[in-house]
Image (cartoon, rainbow, N blue to C red; front, side, top):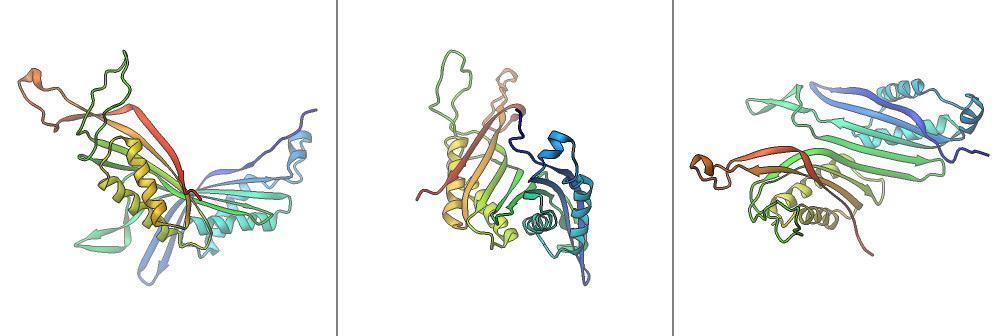
Length: 282
């Protein structure tokens, strides 16, 4: 006999832009939402019985309808509202996973002043959040960001590594260190100012990246995660992904020129990938 061990279904890539208008000042959010529901849906898979299935098109419409009435100013709070709504209105649902990503829009500045109704999007950084709620009352909130591109041109080395017959990489005491940083973390509780917390965590991570005397990407990743866990007790753990974006020193000797660590060629692929999850002990 074959049974359904577990299942989820839902709607992905629900695109939403919300403008909050208040007395000559507008706030703008661009979110992409994914809804995944778990529950008693075996009869649909096994017997083709759709009597317990909420259409995914209805999920899409729920995102827009709830956004109209929501007072949430951040992804995490909106995700909590969505998860609660689906559980309250669908007794066959045992759990809801809400994943939201946000493209960053900032108020455009002209003559040193922010324009109240004009926005600019710069860089490829995406903010992320995943909210998981069960009918038993368990709630998990994970926040983070992805593709934050940073580089340091000093305090970065790579030496003392394993070398064998296939090793061509030369040791370096002074190399460029570039990465597209992604981070995600969970909270010890849910009574958090999520937007302020995210900004603080981001600042701590970037400060550690800038100030750390790096012996490798792994070395710097640990220093960054350690700094944020030590300074933010609300954070249970943090996972960091740091692809090593390579910048190769160009050999100009054949042109009769030196290259005192100034001229490089960027290599998008292949690239190294370094990832680790850090947590407190005890």
